[in-house]
Length: 198
Image 1 (cartoon, rainbow, N blue to C red):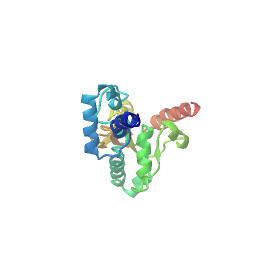
Image 2: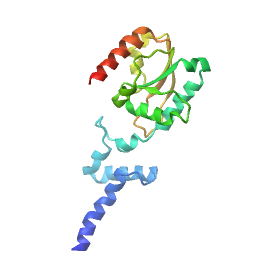
Image 3: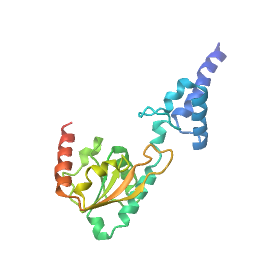
Image 4: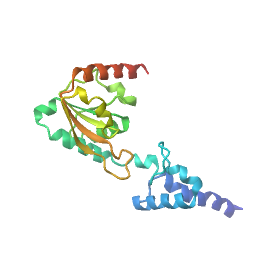
């Protein structure tokens, strides 16, 4: 009986454990998910994301990739500016994951505080955006920036998350130049007020 109980609880956990905790190497983890996807269909849900598609890793694992790459590319854009331009630059991220990545690596790269109107970052958001330059992290790969491009003097794509396993793969980084008051005050301020009421 004891042997049966040990086997009953040990064998399933040997399969499940690597799916929930990242203790194996990346290659072994990928192989494990591939094996489970082919041989244990009932566990395929583990690598099905909120987009309802099956991916090589769980969404939680994928969220662990791309942070350093994103922050490094934001830093590269920031440090390509002159000291005067840097004093007139804000960093804005569309979602809390991107903002968290930049905040986490910010000291390493000597970056200013990141602004976001997503989740708890709203609590620390400034009342307005008032800089000449914005390094903008677009979680839609450039689609969002197109929606307010008419309120900018110019915008240039300066990077993109390329890690094949990152959930943020395709997230684009733009340098926005001379945003108009309609963007800085009307759109941002209204969105901020709305978020603070939620």
